[in-house]
Length: 81
Image (cartoon, rainbow, N blue to C red):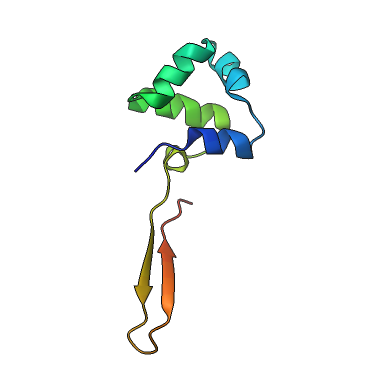
């Protein structure tokens, strides 16, 4: 599961610099956290600031299956609510 914080920020029209300011850290520190292994506490802080669920910070896996009756490909994905 990959971290998609940059995609989330883009959807919310927030730049990396703006997000770093919201977190009261510099851009370099934020980039290190994004590209490293952020703690669950860090992820929770990001999610709270962005008003989203922590699970939305991760890419959602999509799986394709074939219908056993007609052979049609069906795409499945798991979304948080």
